Structure formats: structure tokens, C-alpha cells
Image (cartoon, rainbow, N blue to C red; front, side, top):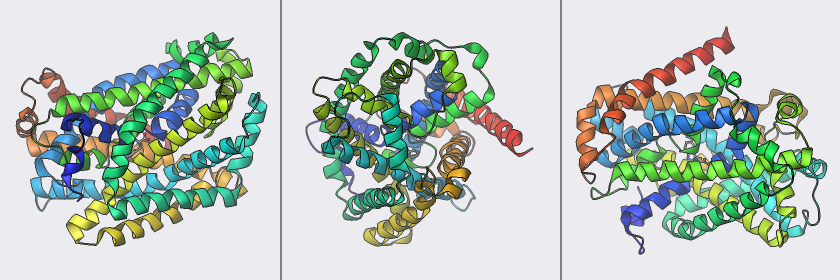
Length: 460
Ligand code: TRP
């Protein structure tokens, strides 16, 4: 494992440094690309409401669990489960996390590649002048269907990620992201102000923020829980690895709280930009949107060029936005590759380089079908491979991982032992009884019920 001092370096003080590093993993395409898709597909504001509740009641609960397991054992998830309960099948949860992580990395990198492609397009001036919905839609579809370009960008993303992990230059990246993530945040705020001042933005805002309770069903809740896990990097051991870097001085509760808060804020602001922009250019009512608009994997890439073209200094804004999006995506891909790599290095004594290169190559190959499933190859497009991968790994397996981690902490390691670890560094844990209830009952029971329901509904 990399040296823990990465979180103590610089003049941030260690707790803030940890929050930046963990938010660097969490904030990425999950909040800016995936969240708006989920909002669009699941009825708008009702989904947003379920997502916020999922983050608060389930995401925060599981995040604190993962951080606590990581700090207590100072190990990756497989090692941690083995250390707390040796010779039990619990380590299987860690292996499941490794597989899930590699699969998510594969299609996530395709989208990170799209961001790189969009940066390139922006620099070339593709979004100069007024960009209409029709133009933006056509640009996205043509680009995503360009098999060669998409594969090259996928390769570049995985190569950069592998390089960073194999060299262990993570600390440098994380130091940069401390400066760049706040810049991304400011940029997003400026763009959201522009979006809500567009004529017709009210219809977009009402779709996004005014819940229609009749649209609620278990599917919405399922995708909201899945989105909470995905955007907070939970359910596969990422936050366990990050927790293993935290020193005993630090307050795990407030650290977890800050990471949840900052990630959710970025997601909410991304929606504030995307929906008013789309509704402005499409001139649709929320009802028409729900009926007629086909929400695809490109909704963010279709909306951002439009809003950027409406900014004074849009060219520079566009370059800044897509550069920062790319960096946010890379800090997330790096955290995903770290999980399997740290397992092979710690538990199997592989060299860092060998582990990173092998897993990087594997995820590139695994990413090819997803890369070609957005128009590149008709057969793969019809099977909608990227969406299916995301459903299985990004929703079902992360949620299952979250359930199992909660059950492990609550009933195998026991809440009272974990509370001992939590109380080191956080004297007053005001939400103690709520957290205890959530980790024992709410997270495992509610999430498993949702999973069982969804699996039954789709299989039977
Ligand atoms: N949370 C990141 C994002 O929203 C993606 C990510 C990084 C992730 N590590 C993860 C998702 C682990 C699930 C599990 O962009």
C-alpha cells in the first residue's frame, strides 16, 4: 500500500487532506454524468428526493462503516475482513468488490474517454457560436459511434490511470486535485447561475425540483440507492482503502459527513445546469419530457455544449470545464484501480507495476464492448452493453456489497467494537443511536428487500 503520509502532506491539516482525497474519488462522472441520467429516467424530482434520503440514511451509514473497518485494520477490504474474522467466507465480500471495481472501471473509462474527446473538440472550436439541441445531439451521437476514436480515448484513459497507480505518483495527483476540485466547484456554480437565468428555465427546474409523488415506485428507490453507492464510491472497498490511510487522531464521523455533503452538492448543481438547459433548448413541458424525450447515456454531453455556448467567454469556459471533468474522472478511475492493485500487492506480494498493468489491460479489454455499444457496432448497441454493465455492477453489485458490509460490521464484528474505533478521534458522536439502527436494520433490510424485489421482477 502507498505510504499513508499522502494525507498528511501540505498545509491542509490531515483531516481536510483526507476529505479532499476521498471527495476526489467520490466526485466524478457519477455526480456529473450518471446522476442526470438517473434523474431523467426516473421521473425527475421524485428521484432527487429519494437520492438525498438514500445518501443521508444509507450512504452515510455505509461510508462510516467502510472507513471504520479500513482504519481499524489498516488494510484493503479483503485483508480487513480476513484480519477481523480469519478463516470465514467474509473475505468473499472483498473479492466481489474487486470484480465489481474492475467491471465498473471498464465502462467508466469509456465515459472518461468521452470527456477527453469533448475536451479535444472544445479546443478545436466545435462548440463556438450558438449550439442548438439538434446540433449538440448530432455531435454526441456521431462521436460516440466513432469506434476508433472512442477506443483510442478509452486506451488513453486506462493507460494514464495504470501509469499513475503503477508509479505510485498518487500523492502528486491528489495534491493537484486539492487545487483543481475547488475550481471545478466554482465553475459549476457559475454555470448553474447561467442555466437558471435562461428563458424557460422554470420548466426544467420544476421537473428537477418539484416532486410528483405519483411517479414514485420501487424502481425509483432502487436506482436512487444505487446512485448513492455509486457516487459515494461505496460497496466495493474503495472507502475501506481510504479509511486505512486515516490516522487515529481524525474524526471519522465528520469526515464521512463532509464527503457525502460535497459529493451530493456537486450532483445537485450538475442537475441545476443540465435540466434548465435542456428544457430551454427543447421547449418542452415536464410532461412532454417524460413522454417524448429519450434519456440516453449522453445527456450531460448533449447539454453542456449548449450552456457553454451561452456563456460570455464560452470557449475558455468550455476548455476549463472539460479539463476539470477529465481530472475529476481520472481521480475516480485511479481510486477504482487502487482497490484490486492494493489487494495483489498486499496479499499476494505482486509488484505494483505488474498488478496495475495486468488489471489495467484487463479492464481495457472488458471496456471494448461498452465502448462500442453507443452506436459503434449495431449488435452491441442493440444489447445496450454499457447500460447493462452499469445496471449489474454499478447498481446491483454495489448495493449488495453495501448490504454485506453492513451485516458484517453489525453482526459479525459487532457494533460495539466498531463504536470503539469510531470514538477514537470523535468524542461526541451525536448520531450514534441513529447510525446503530441504520447499520443494523435500515441499510441491510431495506436495501436487500429492494434488491430481491427488483431481481424477482426482472427475472420472473
Ligand atoms: N464515485 C465515483 C464517481 O462518482 C466513481 C467511483 C470511484 C466509484 N470509485 C468507486 C464508484 C467505487 C463505485 C465504487 O464518479
